[in-house]
Image (tube, protein in one colour):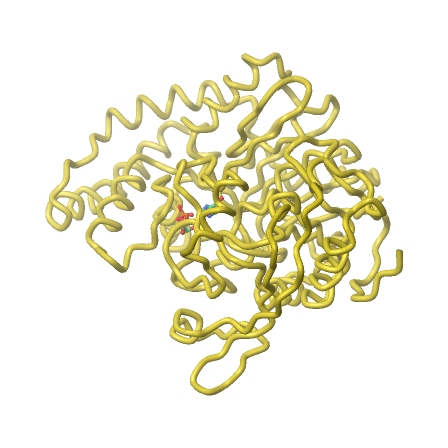
Amino acid sequence: MPNLVIIGTQWGDEGKGKIVDILAREADVVVRYQGGSNAGHTVINNRGTFVFHLIPSGILYRGTLCLIGNGVVIDPAALIEELDHLQGKGIRIGSNFAVSGRAHLILPYHKAIEKANEQSKGSRRIGTTGRGIGPSYADKMSRIGIRVGDLLNPTLFRRKLHENLVEINWFLERLYHVEKIELEKVFQQYMIYADRLKDHIADTSIMLSKAIQRGHNILFEGAQGTHLDVDLGTYPYVTSSSSTAGGACTGTGVGPTVIDGVLGIAKAYTTRVGSGPFPTELTDAIGAGLQERGKEFGATTGRARRCGWFDGVAVRYATRVNGLTSLAVTKLDVLDGCKELKLCTGYRYGGKIYRDMPADLDALTSCEPVYEAMRGWTVSTTGATSYAKLPREAKRYLKRIEELAECRIDMISTGSKRQETIILRNPLEPKRKATTATKR
Ligand code: IMP
């Protein structure tokens, strides 16, 4: 059985949650591999509405093992809140859920540093989610991070906390002029968290290895999107983790040879939250219309998302750097009623046309998108489940997305509910290569 990575091809919020929810039905294991509670998605099914930040939404299926890999950063308060929320709605959480002891913790000082740091940056601020993600990853790379497994060793946990606070409190008080963090208070609080989480802390890499040996089907659930990846995104306006497909290996402790396919999720238009370049952004009534119809407000922070046309350059880049095997296009229905649609085919900057995503931030910030216009459709596609019944213009639009992205489309989402989906092929089918041409 295949192992599939699911990633966002844009700047996050592509609707990965719904696609993971659909595919999780056939998966034995779903594992998160990067990010933290900065991510958020909502799953609507016949049991209600569920908002997820850390726990894979596969938890809604009985018998699906849900794991949080070592590449994720964990805010224990957020995790416990999510466990309580799910259990309160009757979802069973026992041996079907585990978190890697190697995952790094988010501590109160990470949030304090992030807040002070963002404030001090003024107009250069990243527009982070304020969840302490960046500072926690920074500590991990500086080799002073505290890991989930350390919660099980109070003496070690206290020592590490003490060592870190000596320096951190100096920065908080002297540089940022904010209140210092009390060791005892954090220690006591985290020991309460430890007690609640201890039964779920495990070596998730071993669990995955066993699942692979048994021929089980694994979904690697990416958070955020390709262009928020710390290495391959629009740096420095990125998150601090590897949200591209490669992160699935380093963030879970499996080798690349076990991955059979990579499904990229692409919204039928583009959105971005926070600061940073966004070549196809629409600051006019069309953008406001997409925002309203697409309910483009963050599940984590409630912030309004910036909206724009579909960017073929950005998604083709995602095909390349993730080795996409297919695409799922989401929110097609949001484009219903648009008279004209535009797709970006290149960027014009400094007298040159870029067909590939430039690494240069200035070029990305100042470039002008090169557009191709297409006729929109007036018939509603909301809730459509059949490709054949889509309006001709919508089929043309999807076809053009495939060509620009250089990747075939396997799934099309036409609404927020599970059943509001067109499945052209099952992306969990055994390994195959991405192709542009699709006959249907
Ligand atoms: P951080 O991940 O909180 O450090 O935020 C860094 C950047 O990533 C900011 O621009 C955030 O808005 C963005 N970001 C983080 N998580 C998400 C997400 O799940 N969806 C969309 N943008 C995100």
